[in-house]
Image (cartoon, rainbow, N blue to C red; front, side):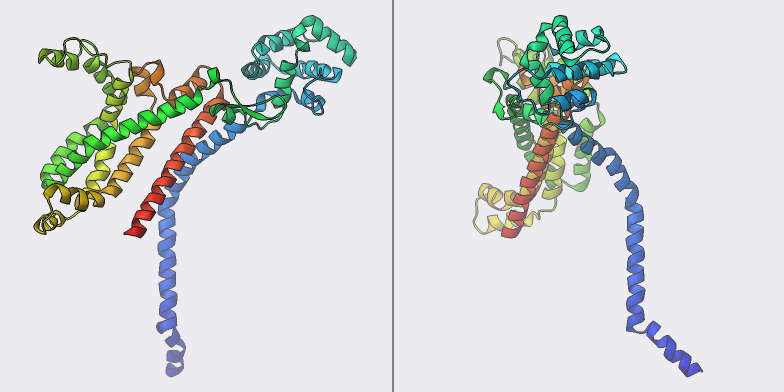
Amino acid sequence: MTAAASAVDAPATGPQGLARSLARAQRRRHLAAIALTLPLLVFLLVTLLVPIGALLVRAVENPEVAGTLPRTAVALAGWDRRTEPPAAAFAAVADDLGQLSDGSEAGALARRLNTEVAGARSLVMATYRALPLGDGLSADQVRARMLELDARWAELKYWQAIAKNASRWTPDYLLTSVDLKRQPEGGIEQVPPDQRVFTRILLRTFQISAIVTMCCLLLGYPLAWWLSTLTARQANLLMILVLVPFWTSILVRVAAWIVLLQREGLVNSALMGIGVLGEPLTLLFNRTGVIISMTHILLPFMILPLYSVMKSVPPTYLRAAVSLGSAPLAAFFRVYVPQTLPGVGAGGLLVFILSIGYYVTPALLGGADDQMLSYYIAQYTNVDVNWGMACALGAILLAATLALYAVYRRVVKSELSLG
């Protein structure tokens, strides 16, 4: 019995039993890792992915017309959009407006149509307040009453706006954000030159962000290199000074720059005191002040990635290059700088992505021609209450961020493959 039991128990302690034990231990480690990271994944899902999904949906959603004028949409389904719509469409509009529960729905409809055609708000609200037009009227009679009420119902542009937005989903917001529009017949064309504003705003956003990124690189690279040459205690002490902006509110920092850069501020007073300037410079409410303040705020985001990479580069490489006959400056640019390019890429990408979403600094320190895309997102959200346009502009920023990240990944992969 003892020998038989030993024979039965042998596989459990043999190679197969050891493999099963290792597999069970591996599964337990995986489950523990999943249990530890699950709260973070749920948090990211709720606070990041869900809002981004809602933003993308709202950028193409068009519920105002489709939700308030369903019968009108059916009546206009076969309309050619070049001749006057059928009398049934007039009756459908009167019926749909009469079914609205309160004036807020009519107001939302009027605002949406007014973004397409000026004057649609007053037309819709006047018709809504005049309802009911009468019971038992035929479609032709309803048409006549509506034309008596407001002759603008005979103009095609209002009907074309209703037919164009009758679908719950629309590309109009995204098209408008890149200075395009749909024609009443359904084609896509550019908006008139005097209305092409968002392309200029987007280019201005990229231009300011690129300048700020270059300024941060020019200031942060030598500082990060100097920190990497110090002892750990000295570097940690100076790194506290680098991180001080993180501990101060952006509004406080912007207010401090207003004090420094105004015409009677410390900067102009100092330059005039030492004789560099004869009269004060205009450094506020223009692009100069915006770039100076943004560079100050975002500089730590460039220094930290650079410092982490530079700290890992052995200083013996430079000494070896110099000992082999290279000039110190040539050795620095040929041996040291290429090894720090991952930090340059990471810091540049981080600063640029943060820059294109800036709102407070340009709004307080810049002029009318220095506002970035985020300013207009806030304008559409808080003032115009046009969530579709706000989300479409946000989607443009998101697409730009993803494109930049994709380019960065491709460049990093190509460098690693070459290395």
